Image (tube, rainbow, N blue to C red):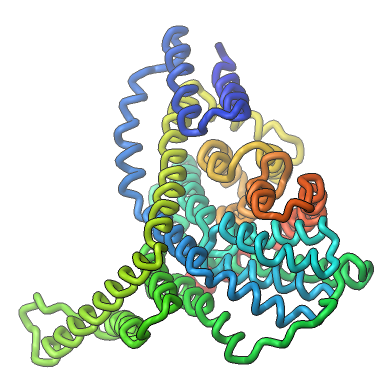
Length: 515
């Protein structure tokens, strides 16, 4: 019975591999092993009384509230075909360059990652639009498939990202645990803004590595990545700006407000959701004047709230305060009218219903996994699992670096079979406090793990990006070609992780400057 906790973890992995839904598997395994532990006298069932507090804490977590808003923003952009316009325009812009189509796919993947953060939507869109174009122009199917899959996964490391939001919450809790165990009671935390800032430079580094590989591949093997056989007409400047401005506006509105300290991640996510809805409404035709006025009103409200907050309930309110209050109410009315018109247009275009359905599905999956993982971790800790994990990590040769190498290898292997959410909420709460106690910087550690988890989208046999592309790719592209195509990019990911390991300021310098 001494190793009942480790048996519990092994049974969980086996049950997930058999195909049972993760949320039900986590709860079922936890209940079974709680009963076994109680029967053998090694588990105190009184610990289960903490479940209500854990559930309440999850549902009132201000950080996780941003998840459905970011998901909504990404699905709206995908449904409104903004991503398709961007792909077509960038493909024509770089098509005359050898390997240019591949470069355009990587750049579009980075832009979509910074404006949507939805991996599935990005991979499917590029698989349906860019991949056939690359194949028609003589690209090697393996290279084309690898580029599309990898560019789509940039949504996991370039903020705003659901992975980074979950990681910031998990690592902040782990950091607090580590400080309590050190006897500190004035503790520091890790915010989503810090995690976003830390991920920005490593994410751009990965983009640069992918582009360098694409250009080198085109130079060394011209037949694998040729220029366009029949170069299309170069897009006009207005067409390029028209395709680039929508995602750039969202990137500035969302990331700029977070990194600039103007808004919290949840507030910025709500701005992004409303902004994406307005951009989608503009594409449906009709008069754009009210939408533009609504956007200007929201911008004005943001500036007003920053420079001269209106507080009419104060006893010393003067005429200027009332004037500003009336002005703010007018701006709110204009913004509400614009949002109402955007909702009507989205409903008439049959965009709103699938957007809401997708948002609810993804959000429910994420929160169900986090909630049931809390049940699992409570039972696992009650069986002494956290002590066993700490002993195993501490016994690794090489000290702190050896322990981190072991954990990173474990995450990489689990990524072959498990989703990033499952790894984040099941494994990381167990290992992260130990690694932080060994002296690893928690912000740097978050990004190193994030890149490792991003790789789980590419690793066969269960990489999600591989499945997304398989469903969207032309029939002539085989599953084997997709699997072989991502292998060089997995090695590039590992190379990026090595660079981050050797040069920690890549992840820590921006958070220190901004926060």
